[in-house]
Image 1 (tube, rainbow over the protein chains, first blue to last red):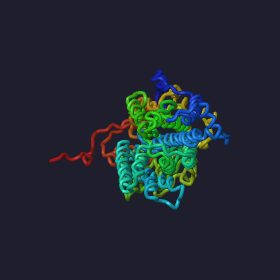
Image 2 (image 1 turned 90 degrees about the vertical axis):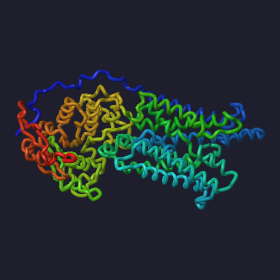
Image 3 (image 1 turned 135 degrees about the horizontal axis):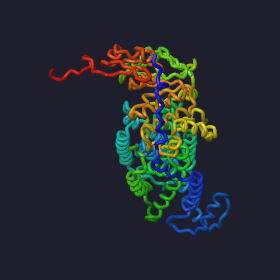
Image 4 (image 1 turned 90 degrees about the horizontal axis):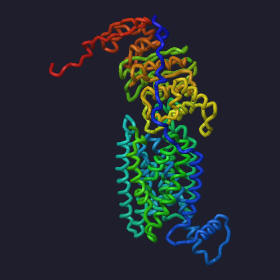
Length: 369
Length: 265
């Protein structure tokens, strides 16, 4: 019987042959980045409260914020200014942070879930799907029995439904190809936008046209303290789940087979991600409409800074998304003041050139070769 | 260190992909699985690393039923290199290897020093420690395979399952991969495409054809001209390796039954 190998003369291993190769990717140290982003977030929240159509002194803005946070008192003649800062601008900045964080984190999750760097809730038509549900509530009073939860529940359900629809249509026996997915998402986006438009048409109310604009382009104009809790709860819950799943997301990003070999049930994880993505997208869309590009761009920008590991990605992306959207919202208020631009217009204005730049950068292999 | 596959059957959409497959591997042996394309090699291995649930039969590791274990538990005992190695995400080599620790780690716990030591040792074990900071997508095919073997070793398994690990590699890289796998001392079950490579490196071969095991044994006993004609439809001569005496095959031509009919003839 032939026993293999032992009797073959040893060949010198080729392992020593490799030279330096391309330099390792340069990355920003994580603690430094997180500290900087937290500081930027605080600063941005204050700026969000201080900047706007009516100019207010920074000292006064800080005083109003302090009064609002601690329940302190202010002079009666300052009340109008206080209301602008504490009841309008600050909740709006907070909501922008929540929405930005949520969109960015869900972008990361959806990209890992479909193993495709082109995916995000907006590109895949999920945001516009959620907008259909939210619109139905606002225009026709659907889900009326759910009260304050009606809007979020409707947005969640229609987000989940549209996600399943896109997934079911794009899926083939060989899995999800980027092209099919993006094409399906685009088609669905138009479909859902058409439904929204039709609902506005059928509603025959003056308010409806403006509302439809908001759903399709995204706006934080309706923000008040009442809209913060549900969105913040959904986003924080989603972040907690994703942070807890970060290692499994790494395995999933390597492929279903590899995930299985590493003890990760890809099917189950994908179902969890489905629910989380639908819940967060629904909650976010219910308060801000379908804001594009944030969920697509922020994950890519963050990957360039800290690499593909989801533990780092999910720590940095929400912070960066929060800061980004606060500033986009500030811009939307001041560029054409006193008129307001829809946030989605600005995210597109910023997002499109960034996207083109990313595509053309050779060192960033975001979509494989 | 043992893996026992008993009466494994896989049926998908009415098609029998595997039928009553029984196979054993153990004792640190390198066990090869050979067969034509579409014969069921990958299907069988996918059942073993739990990417596919068989319709019937059992897989046991050291006597314990694989499907009665949690996915994490079985991943601590058995590591695999599936055939797909495509990812769009540019993980570093160190990150890829650390994924091997996943079945040992709790979801939110930090990476421990022991994890780091295990990963470093696994990477050094395949001679790829100098690649640790490189992007996985920038590696050559051979380097990728070494890193994936390191990931499997970082799992600290008792059994290693490989699905055609030498695909798309040049000859030196192929030999390197098999040498690394052999050095691991683990019980290895591997699908191989190249029959001569299998004959030279495997202690035991199982030949699979249309979902059934049709021959098992030492390469010398299994790779007979009759079997090659029957299973692969080729005429082959057996020769012996001048140094090791291992059986090697020289392929002659397609047997008439396998030659596609020309249009019009």
